[in-house]
Amino acid sequence: METTTLSFENMHVHGELFANLLRARRESFIVRNNWDLPEANGMEYDQYDTPASRWIAVHEFGEVLAGIRLTPTTARCGIYTYMIRDAQRGLLESIPQDLLYFEAPVAPHIWESSRVFVSQSVPANKRMRVQANLMGEMISAARTLGATQILGLVPAVWSRWIARLGLDAEAAGPKMEIDGSMSQVAMMNLAGTLH
Image 1 (cartoon, helix red, strand yellow):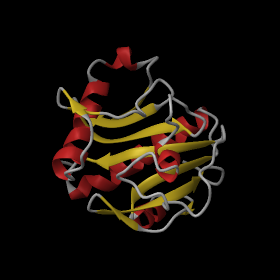
Image 2 (cartoon, helix red, strand yellow):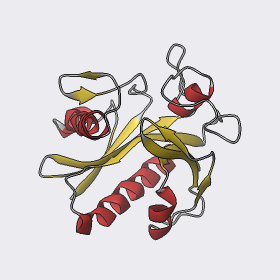
Image 3 (cartoon, rainbow, N blue to C red):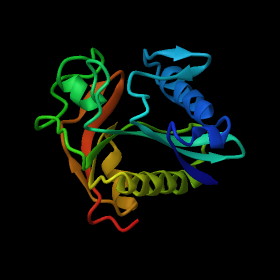
C-alpha cells in the first residue's frame, strides 16, 4: 500500500494516479452516495480542483483505496475560494450556510480538507490502516505547506475514528444532513499531532 500527495507540479510523475483518484471520487460520491456533482469521462471534479489544491491518494496495485483534497483557505478562483467558506457565503446550493460556528477563516496556516473518502471495496480489516495512512499523509502534506490547522466537512462519525488515530480535533459546526449523509465541520489542530 502506498500513499501519495499529488499536485499539478508532480502529477505527471505518477501516471494515471490523479485520473484514478477522480474516478474513485466519482464511484464514492456520485455512484454510491448519489450526489449531484460534475463529472466527465468517468471522473468527478469541481471548481476547487485547481493548481492551489493538493490531493492525497492511498493506493495499491493501481486501485485508489482512499483520498482527500487539501485546499488553502487563501485560495481564490473567480468568485470561488474554498468549499466551506463558499457554502457559508451562500454560493453552494447543496451545503447549508450555517455549517460553521464562526466566520470561515482565511489564513495561510489553515487549509481545508474536502472530498474525503475510503473506497467501499476496502475490507473492514484493512479500513483502519487505510484511514491511518490517509490521515498521516494529510498531516504531513499540510505541515509541509505551512498549515497548523485543517478545517474539514467530514462524515458526522469523525470523532470515532479521529480518536482511534490519536488526532486532535474539535467540532467547528453543527451536525447536519447534506445530500442524505450526516456531516459536520471539524477543525484539526496539527500542533499537538505527532504523526
